[in-house]
Length: 71
Length: 507
Image 1 (tube, rainbow over the protein chains, first blue to last red):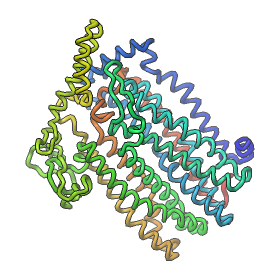
Image 2: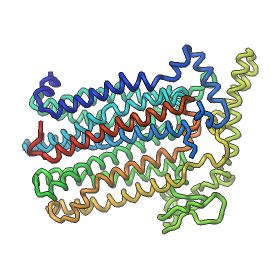
Image 3: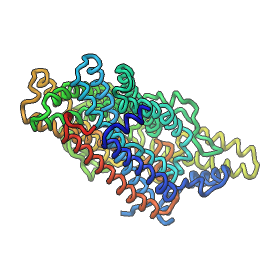
Image 4: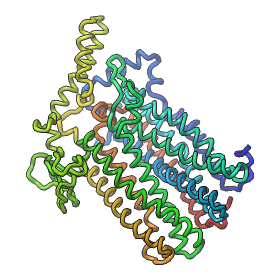
């Protein structure tokens, strides 16, 4: 009630802000997140054991990470 | 320059958090200042205070709305660019972030609506209560973020699990209430309060120079200047506390920040220019400038003749003061890594005796785990130039604020705050200077933590995800455009409201 009355009866500045926030949320959660930010572990490994095994290899691999730029 | 995936991931994180952090300190400081103003309205009943409260609240709301959710981008980055970090540290790091989301964020959202839209719709008392709760919620939110960051600076209250390669929390209280977190939180909020006050002072000075809205500007100055003065001195006190914890917990950071190559008893602070060609062990001067004898020992150890280790001591070790050589730390780290590897091989072979032996070795060496990934002893030292200059810029501006706000306070008390163009012109730049000091201090904290994401436990080079370089490059530019546009929109809306002034707000 407070939000509905307070927001809609106020002038355009709040509406502009609401518009900006909405566009930002839509852009971030509907476009950027699914297209560019997959969860690496969830996407590449379908079980905890596989994730665990991958991470053990990663974290016990003593070498520099220069090769990462080639991938 | 060989700009690798990890550098792009770091650059992206730095860029996105830069944009996020443009809004955060204003919000932290302004919520408290607005609450103080509304308290004055509640106490005096004067409409002028209500008008002032509503104007600053409007600017705060614009800042809040544009900054809203820019922090969520970092959650995306953790999952995609920094999955190794998230896997290893998620159980510890995630807890304070979850508390922030559940506890602090809901306080902000619930009471923020009442504070912004509830004028005339709830009682004066409940409205004031809501405004204070918004300030408290915002600051609590900051506290949990600092707790998470402090774990990265000084990991405590955890155990590294050999089975899963994950750090598991053993004591939430130890993570949340460690001295590093408390000192950093106090330092961060007081610098944000100072920045919030300079936001108000800059705009009020603009009105006074333009000779418009003079009564409003004076009223705003009357709240902002004592608040800024108080926080400038409080910053000095908590900065001193923080210097002591950093010297104890991150000696490499303080050595780099002061350009101290050779450790000594009664170590000085040298105000000057860093010699870029200085290398550990050579005879060159490290910093050209004016030395202040014993000041670093006092600052870091609270004792005039205490020993402060230099970069060379930290690399080569110093037996007299019980400092292990970096080569030994690396060796122990490699023992821990090897024990984890051998443990999992033994597990595959179902050799329980070998598993137990390696678990024992791992437990003895796990606190050095991260060092095993470093290539050479010199790698333990952060970038000296950036750490040195950001630290000195922060301290220099902090000292300036301590002097400048005394002058402004005296002028305020004498009723001369609206006169004297010089002081008002300098006041116009206090917001910019405050931002520079805040970002410099933050840069020193984060760059000075290198080569680690979690000090001693996980090096930055092992924290990133093995993904395509082009993915990170592409999202870097998407975010640069998105956040740049949003910031431009905010500044435009903010400037429009400032130009309209408190007597003709759109709302």
